Image 1 (spheres, helix red, strand yellow):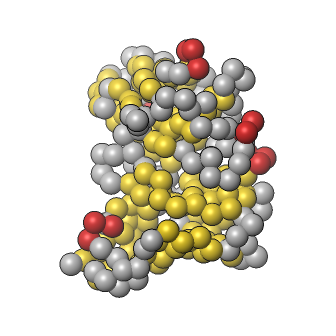
Image 2: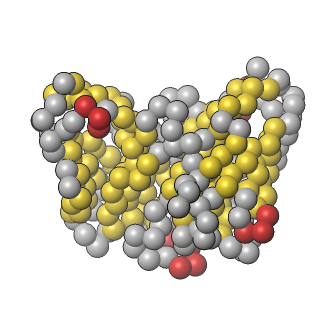
Image 3: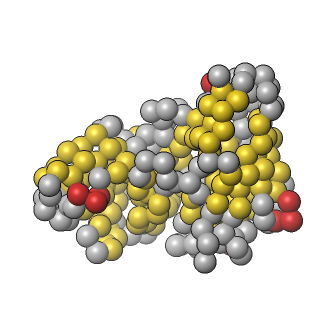
Length: 113
Length: 120
């Protein structure tokens, strides 16, 4: 039962353009969502989060949007840079699941110079 | 301060042997998590420690897996009689608060670099 899904295993964009990574979830009890970035041979690094009381959170070039009715969130990176090339994981938690995170499968982002 | 550290970074073992993986969380973090990432998969929750409370073991895949957290700090994940399907990257994470003190922004989990386990 995959409660958090990232349907695109990979995404390729040009430097300077917008990258949009998508994530869908099925568990309506999830109320806190996070994006992590992972480089090869390293652990995931926290990027940005959003609680269910908001629909947008922005931090520099990174913006996360949450559409609760659609159970969908997205991460926008503008402008994309080659150093952003990594695997991006969407994760969710909810009060009934404790603080454990449920992760999506990840999306490999490649930003081409 | 120092981040989450894990050792060893790589472990190759033979099927049937026992292995121990170690995690040192960020100082002062009360909650500690173990996840694993199999090839081509997302991160899979294994076990969660919060302070002195009984751990949440609901993610452990079999009774060959166990974990301890001594003194509320260092944790070891033990896999007995390893099988080839145990091959994965095992990741540890810590956070300042767990369920007991949940507030927005404090649930962020900080991950270690992982231990890549290969069972031949």
